[in-house]
Image (cartoon, rainbow, N blue to C red; front, top):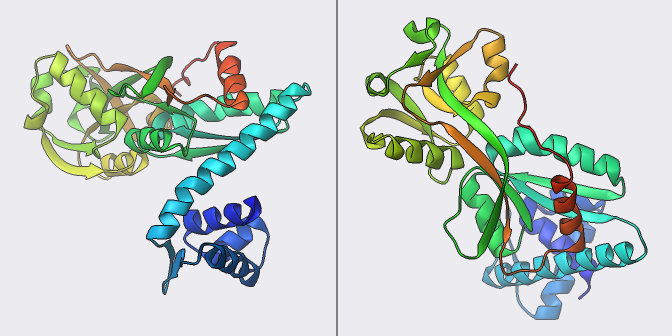
Length: 303
């Protein structure tokens, strides 16, 4: 067993395919299969079930995957620490972002960071808030930026930037000529909401609770797992929704959607830099945090 074999094994598990893993590490599929067989021989058990369309880890494979990810993370941390000792900043940094910060906030930060430190390779995983926090708890990610407070003692968070949400309706809606609506008017509309685990959903529910409104009384017609899909649903007359203003700025500028405020409802929220409270951060993660703290981070402007 060696670290390179563990790297290939993790790629197979992550991509659920020997051929895709081979392309990712620039090896042929037979060579990937050979490395996996060497690992299976070493541990004397099957690690990957080769199904018709997917390669999935066995129970033993899932166990090895957790340890392999930790070994690979420690390898990267070692490389970063030795480079830092020699006065260099280099290595791999895995970041996570929930939907809005992942799409609209982190790309600009990562671009500035890699311009300053060109020998750093940054990987960005975008998922909902719950998935990013679970990945941090599991040790798959060191740092993430999410749109909700995690009520967990193991998670540490600091506010990174503020965001503003608003009611979004199609341009053809009767409200499209207005600037605001009352909360009571919302309950007569077909409403589209994000899926459970979404930071956007948690923030909206908290705003309703603070205003003394019952979120459960909304006429929810769909729960959708991405902001982009909700945008399309609104544009096609499925219903209205509350979304980040920056996420719909292009549609608003093009006249396809219209945004309104809701009287008495505070729809401001924040995005939080998030990490594990009880795990030591790698040198590269600390450099990234120092970089963020050294410059003001502003939310993207609306179009």
